[in-house]
Length: 212
Image (cartoon, rainbow, N blue to C red; front, side, top):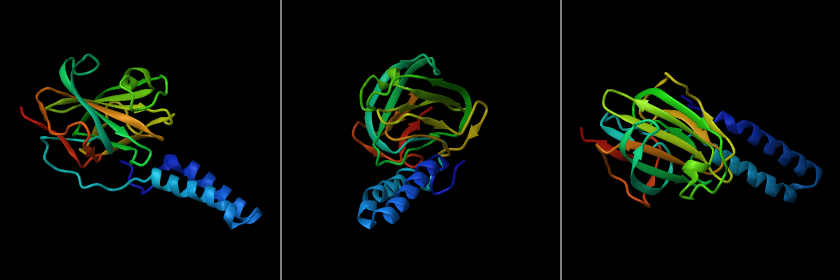
């Protein structure tokens, strides 16, 4: 959905730092422009939007985010699936790509934004306490819930989709600014093939496989 090398949500930050850097260099000297120049480069890096080679097998469940798997736990999902499920939680550091991608093909049949706190994204309770945005994806084979969760630095969850939109596997659908985590909840019929500590890439790493 969003194919530019830098997501548009970063333009205002990048533009502001570029202007500050130029003003500092011209007014004070090149040496003093190192700090704002470094921040400018970091923002270019943070808001990057790389292309990915998306697997085409419709039985696969892809990672919705870049980062590190924090946990893989069994639970009962009463938000969308209404059945026993497995939740995979992925932590995104400020060095990870923060664009989120659809784990499967499907129609968005559920969407919920919840205001909340901004606790560190690696805390166990952030999925219940922090600002979050959930979408439920549904196709003929499976229903999956994906939740973007804000962290201590992330103050804005961005969504480029709404109810009724149909997403392709690996399609970009939103991002979280400056540190966060993403949760994906799947039925127990999905075979999870990642474990705690694994590093994943959104839209590219396979985290599960449909067995039914």
